[in-house]
Image (cartoon, rainbow, N blue to C red):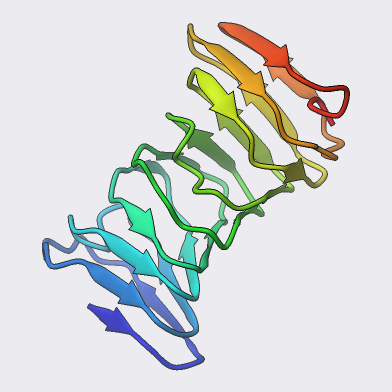
Length: 165
């Protein structure tokens, strides 16, 4: 599936295609965790995920990912997108340190890091950061988020004075 043009397109059905998704312009909104089939997503514009569940498709490209809506969504792929992540509603769970790509994270809701390793993406915004799971996670970015930090599981290491916002 190819999404081009400047407008917004919403996919809400449960789709079973496996050939992948290319977003070359505008915004593609998925309101169902299975709306984008099972293939990889190349995001060179905006992918908005307004759904809950687990999204395990790999996301690459220069575009940004937006988590909207009130649900809890888990990103579990090893993602390489570079355009950053915006969390405007609900909870976005990263189940590995690559789940949020390489760009900055603007968190105005809840970012839950259920993983271990080194998370070096910069985190800003008014939202809360939650460390869950049993592993040790190091925050090494220069973070400015203001919503506080909750450690509900594992160990959280701050590698610099700005790591905890």
